[in-house]
Image 1 (cartoon, each protein chain N blue to C red):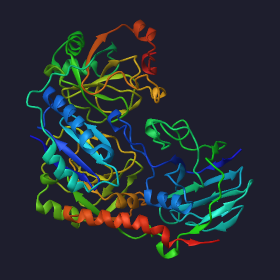
Image 2: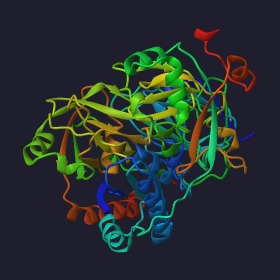
Image 3: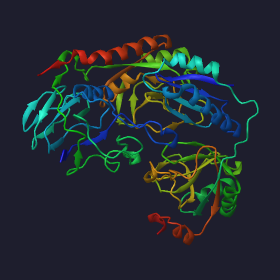
Image 4: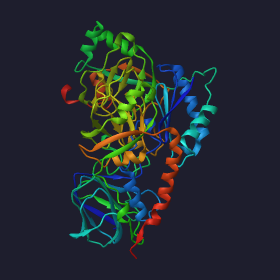
Length: 233
Length: 314
């Protein structure tokens, strides 16, 4: 079922059932194609997340309520959802207990090795990209690792931090504040603004792709171009 | 060389064009002029054909040297403007000669000014836009605020006629603000009593305000929150975190967020909010969706007719 709400004088938000699911992911990708065709030049921004799609119209549009009524009429959910698999992206991780690895293990009543093993064992989908350029929301984490956000966010999370929150995992593309539990570091740059305007990709994944993490050593991390933060030097 | 040199960068001066669109799905913030109304009037006064790259001067203290003859104007907050030490009026376009120095003092009311030149500043764009988003280090020059000694090339040296926005049309940034709130998003999570409280409370701008968003102070609005998956945040969206104090999200907001929202304020009012500083009095009022079309027609008419009110200084 598609539900549309206003999200401002020039914006609508489309909701699917509030769940993290591959079905939502596929439906949202199909809905984006429909909306691009239906709105064409009127569309300023299309921003998908887990179960929603923010639709921002250009200022000179035919009226947000008219657009809402038209979309309510025209948008359809695919009856049989094609399984779009997306490409598989491998992300190396230097797991390290300098941050929250021990605390996550203790909370889950597991060894750190088991935490690393579980984190690597799943294939995650990229459900949304946002918060910061190249920050991909990956789901779903093994339920045994589900860990709430830190009570008080860190002022500085290092670039490349591989972290978990609830049943999600992600990699911080740049140093930033953040409240997720850090398990290790990824040496691969996740946002390359220097690729703007070229045929090279700005980030290694897009929404719908699949991600797997692979444990690497400290030497491999450095060899792949990873920068160790001060606390590990 | 057709350019300006930054002599003093001031408290926070950034390059801004109309904003960055089409990249939100990669996590890139919109950016753009925090008070787009003042920004747009600057382009109209200079007869710039498309949205130009201008300097957004927050608080004040900017000083630039012209290396070329051209025409410029400053719109927005009431900052004292001088050229070679001679006072000049805001909301006017002015001729300027090579070696002239433009200086902006500190805002007496309002927060942000727009210094625009004929043709606009001409700098390389990041993701289709010159808009600086400091947090993301994109736009402007190397994604940072202006710094002393920087060169700001100008796109052209054409010299338009001089125009003035009549004083009766100058905005007053000192009066309490009424923010039109379009119900949307999780509007139904708030019952009638909570809506009445939201629209009946006098809020003040807290110490936490910037281009990302404005945190308000006042009587907290407590309600039964439910889990919400992160979702796209529109310009002017009003978030209600568990402490019950609204945050209005502006140009440099994060693209996705998970706090409930009763709706979003009108873009014109979000621009006016961006001129406020700590302690400014704010009140929301509800915009029924049936009023939206009329409001938008009125806005389009306003922008189409505004240049007809300009006076010429020929």
